[in-house]
Length: 347
Image 1 (cartoon, one colour):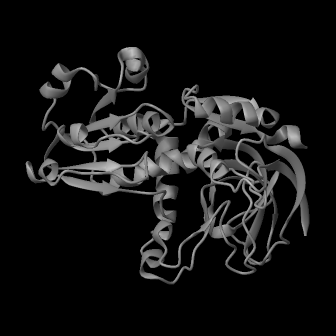
Image 2 (tube, rainbow, N blue to C red):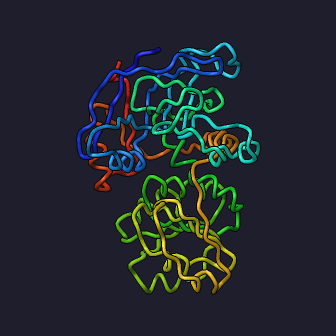
């Protein structure tokens, strides 16, 4: 076994604490990665809040990270010690089902192995995440980090970035497409950058005008204030694709009203129960979809695209010792637009 150090949560509301724990010995197709930078995702916050009050469960969060390969298994040919890599929220899959064969490991019929809070497919152990100094991962689920991408600012691409990239590509977004992004946060700001780089006419929908300047700095062509009924009415039936990245429960009706005939609203932010009126879909023959993470081909494609267009996340970088501050501020929406932890203070 390999010893490492990380930040562990064992009950909701309690601060994460620094602990030593064990990683598995390398299997033939594994790589060991020294974790340098790990993004802080809303999913981390949800997972911590979902822990039992009894303290019986232990969780090391973190599922969007970059780092350097420090060791490889004997069957690994795609990586060498010293390579800079990126890893996302999926670290294994069955590899045999129709979804895996189609390059959609994120929809694996046997459920993909998650970077943390998952179950290892070989020994049944619980996976522990990348708020830690080392991670051991199957080589197929590590990606070369293209030269020129800042390793800290690239870390959120492996969760927030791929989450918005897959639907943009699946829905054929490109020149001539009218795209709206609802919510300007960790997902939303990357959706804007990617949609603009794909050539789409891109609009941001926000509850207030406070982020209008930021939206335009990110490349948006227009901002619609969702609390301004005049603006919302003027934009009815306008957008071919609407990416809904709002992380809290909300009504979909007003946003479906902005979707053009045969257009699609893709629900990405809030993944809990939603209520939809059939008439909101019927009038205009509108579509409602969702997406989650991405498969291996799409992830590799996204990283290359981001390198070509110099796209990374807007981040606030902080030492990992301030992880509890980051989580608290994230819970209050006090971040523009992604916290990233520097794990070097765990050395």
